[in-house]
Image (cartoon, rainbow, N blue to C red; front, side):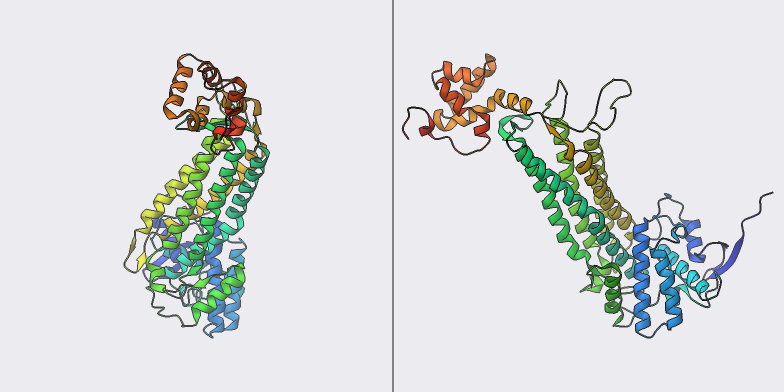
Length: 478
C-alpha cells in the first residue's frame, strides 16, 4: 500500500498552506503552483541563476551596511551560492505565466534560500524564525526591481557566453568562404531574374558583413542592458533600502559575474519601462532576419542537383525523404529559417509586453524574460549549427556557375555605354526570340567583332564592375 505524501503546514498572511515536506520552497510558492497551471514552461536555469546572483549580492550589501549579522548573512550567502551552482533546480517549479511582476518566482527564490539557510544554521525547513524569506532574503528589495535586474544579468551573460561567440565564429567562416570563392563568377539575380555577374565570394563577403553588423547592433544594445534598477524597490523611490544599497549590491554583482553593470541613472524609468530589453530584442530580430535571408539564398543556390541552380553543394547530413531514395535536403538552412521565424514571433511578443508598463511598473516581465532568453539561446544555437555544419563545408560548383554566367542575357548591360540602352534592349529581345547568345547577336548585327564580343562580354571581367570605355574596343580611339 502506497504511503500518502507528507506535508508540512505553513502559514502566510492569507492563512494556512500545505507544503510538501521535502520542498525547500514555502507557502507563497505552493499557492502559485496551485493557481498558475498554464503552460508547464518554467524559467530557464540561466534566469534562476541570475536571480540567485541578485540575492547573493543583496545579502552581502545588507551585511556591509550592518542590517544582517554575519552568521545569518553567511548562511544566506552559502544558500544562494548553492542555488547558483544548480543544487536546487527542481525547487523552482513555477509556470512562467504568473503574476506579471514575477512576484511568485521572486518569493520562490526567497523561500528556497531562506529554508536552506535555516538548515545551515541548524534549523528546519518551514521555520522562518532563523531566516525569514521577506525580512532577510528580500531585505532592501522588491520584486519590482529584483526581477528586471535578473533579466538584464541573465541576458547579458547569455550574450557574452553563447550568442556573440557563435556569431563571431559564423562571420569568420563566411569570410573564409568569401576568400575561397572570390574568383568564382556566377550570374547575379535581382527579382529572381538574371542580372549582371557577381562572384560567389562577393556574395559570401556580404553575408559576413550582415552578421558582423548584427554583432555591432547587439553590442550597442548591451550598454542599455548594463543599467540595473536594483535599489529602486517598489516604485522607484528606494523606500526600505539604504541609499548606499544599490551601489554596494551592483558592485557585488560585478564581482560575481565579472561584468560591468551600473546603477540605473533614472530608477523610475528603470521600473516603468523595459526598453533595454526591447532594444536588445530588436537587435536579435535583425540578426534573425539576416540569417533567414542567408539561409534562403543557400537553399536557392544549392537547389537541384539537376533541375535547380546547382551553384553550391551543402554538406549532406541525413537522408531527405522517406519515399524518394537518394534525396538530400538543405536541413540546416531550413532549421535556421524556423528559428528566425520563432525569434520574430518572440520579438513581437516582447513589443506587446513592453507596452504594458502601466504607470510605475511593467506587468509582463515574466513574458519578456522567457522570450528574450529563448531568442538569445535559439539564435546562438542556430548560428553555431549554420557555421559548423553548413558554411564550413560548402563546396562551389565553379563550372556550373561560369556556364550560367556566360548564358545570362543581362551581360548586355555592359554594352549600354557603347551602343546605348535602346539598342542594347533590342539585342536582348532578339537573343531571347531567336534563342541565341548575346555574342552571336552582336556579331551578326555588326556591333562587335568576335574578339571584341569575347572580351567585352566576359563575365569574369564584368564582375569587377566599373564603366566600359570606348577605347577598350579594338581599333577605337578614346
